[in-house]
Amino acid sequence: MSAFVVIHLISKTDARHVFKNILQPLLHRKNIWHHIILLFMKKKILYSLLAIIIILGVWVAIYPQKALQTVVDFGMWMTSSMKHRDPSKEKPKFELTADAFSKEFKDNAAEATKKYINQAVLLEGNVTTVSGVTVSLNNIACNIDSTEVNKIKDIKVGAKMKIQGLVVGYNDIMDEVDLAQCTIK
Image 1 (cartoon, helix red, strand yellow):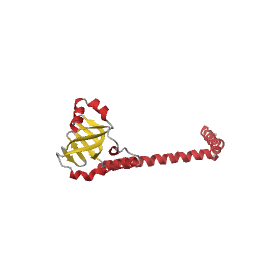
Image 2 (cartoon, one colour):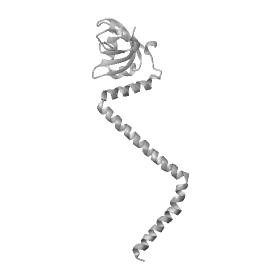
Image 3 (cartoon, one colour):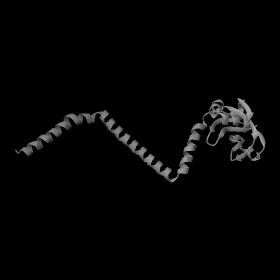
Image 4 (cartoon, helix red, strand yellow):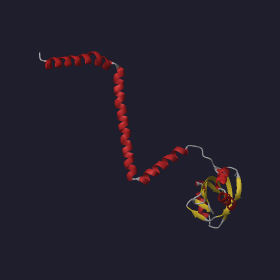
């Protein structure tokens, strides 16, 4: 026999030996099939997730406004079941004029922010602008609560009024104090 034929027979017998004595017993065990099936399932899941990510990426590229609105709507849906604070039903921690409140932020924004942030305040002052759902008293922007939106149409610029709301922040660039969930008193 030539060396080629001997190597060929040895390699065939070795392959048969490997299959018969090593692979065949493993393939009959349930664990191996279970692992193989799980491997294919993981690949299917990964490919499915990759396809979803690609589809969402294309959708965001084509319709950025709709995508943004969908994300916002999803966030609103996620938080709608949570109990929210209602500053209109709280006794205000601070009652002052809009000018005095504004002056505190102009004099020392850091201290005023520490003092007023996340607190219910009752402010009295003259309306300087009305825009959408925001009523401004000088540099204080009061976002009117959705339960009070129908009252906005009756507000006139220059009118003196009391507004209660939750202090949510101070914008030092615009020099503006932001109040949320405001109600007209």
